[in-house]
Image (cartoon, rainbow, N blue to C red):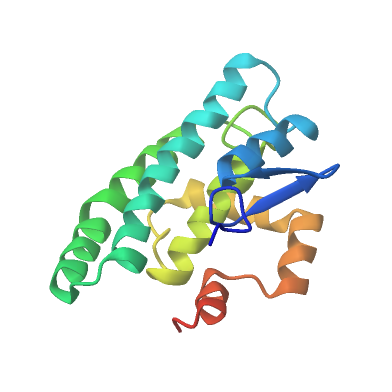
Length: 173
């Protein structure tokens, strides 16, 4: 039986009767649509870079969190993630944020990459440990700045959004 979704998975964005799938594709589309791609081609490329780098990290997290069925291997992969992969990525992001004066990762105004990366940082806090950003003061400030934006704060308040909420929906809590 064929799936009702183009790639057999969510999310799907529907615009004018047309469907777009894949999280990053949807985010990039919305970034272009709402002028959230930076001030120039370089800033747009940096948005892509930071999102792609954090996608790599989150893919590792998904690998042990949702896909690994062998409990010993799952524990091993999680330990490596916490001890090596996550700190490596967070330190690089901390350095990037330290070099950019404003509240955001790229330039002086909000980009789609800021929203995407802040969301991934929240996911790590929700699932790994609420203290994962300790020792990364610039990332803490950055994530708080993004989540304090009025429309994002209102969405979080209304939806009760956390990644753990997804576990409840999937029956994994």
